[in-house]
Length: 269
Length: 318
Image (tube, rainbow over all chains, first blue to last red; front, top):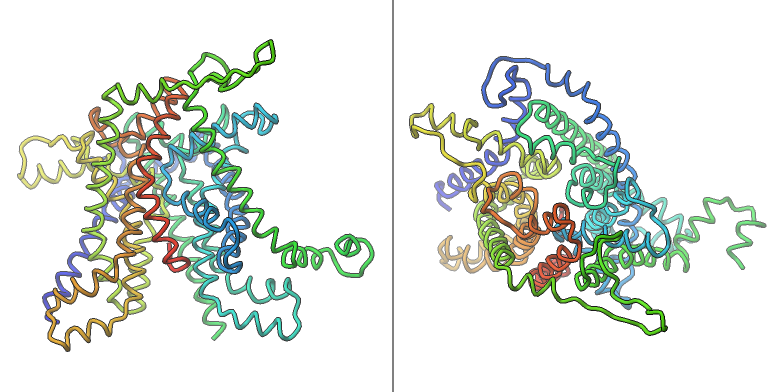
């Protein structure tokens, strides 16, 4: 192959990454801007971070979102792991097609449809059985679990299907009980996928505006709702500061999980 | 019986008992039944309810729609189905235009994503390991940072005194700021930007699994590189192309945040129409009818996506 071809290819690659990262970098740079006008550079300052830390509305919304996201992530990992085990290990069973459809459709279903459908379900349930009473943290969490468990399923399923089944068979031949095999062999091997799935479910929930808006009640304003109503009024340096913090935390989490997985893999060798 | 004796009499701990329940015959059932019931209740049933309420009439009450059936005083069952909501979707051109526009915007954005994403995925698949992992991670990273904030970033770039206009003015390419924000162009840009990782990841998955010796064989037989690409690489990556396109197209059709924040008054997409029916007009039945028709339009793409998922089951590193 000629040398020009890879050059062109890597130029396109560089263009793609520039496209992905320039907006994020601009966002971060202007969070340190003195000027309130987000796009005019007035000098370096961290005052917007200070104001952010005194913005009670954002802080309480962030706390609410973090609570919802962590409950959601934990329950999604349990549900998603069960669903992945069902798909990978249990072969063909009656109703598998419907199951597979219901697991994978939330991956692409437009948010507005999921939000509306969840809300109508909660209203109907409240009418019929009195639960969930009103709308708030419970309804947001329930609606989030349904779609984030689908993402966890994909992540865990991918790891489970790479797993060498002969390890489990060997343990079974040696007389280990099924739960012991699961705890001592399967679980440690799929642990990185569970961690990745947990983080993914966590960020999906932390990030969701549309579904939460449909199923939220008075007093359950999540962080994306506050950001959205502030953004609708115009650009604000505080939102830039918040965005920078989110990017920094996400980057740290990903680096940490990569390091953990890497360490686990090099220990096994 | 054995389960109860396990709790009460035997020396085994609660953890072991739980372990047996989770992995034994009953456990196997629990592993299937729990997610199955969950999805039936929280994913399947809601769609049935949406269909039901789309046939109701809007009322000033709680809940704000008429019941589909009720028992009259003499004990007869009265069923009232209102097709008005669907009739309105058909008669008012606003809805038709919004559906058409959503399909057009989603379709073109998907194509642009494919044109940018394919070379990227191809290039990543051809690099070696430390670099490849870094490049992949850089694709995934924006996907993990807040979607809302990534859309917000474009407001600062596109607005009339924003970064892009300032840059173009400074370079002397334009005399007056261009109107970029609140246009269809901004909506396309926002969708392509937000959904690009969803295109690159499945494409990378198929391209990196491809058997490179096929290309060598084609070259040995005198096949030109571009022809080998068209007749070997492209057909083999078709499952990735379909999966990636559906991962972009389907959610983009119902997108609300991007047309709302970046679009103008005429970038009317159906997700925004549904939102307005629900939140501003408080017309739940009309919003449900909009959702039902959107789902009907998405049946074919959804089926294509399901097939692609089923084929690559457990191999997509999303």
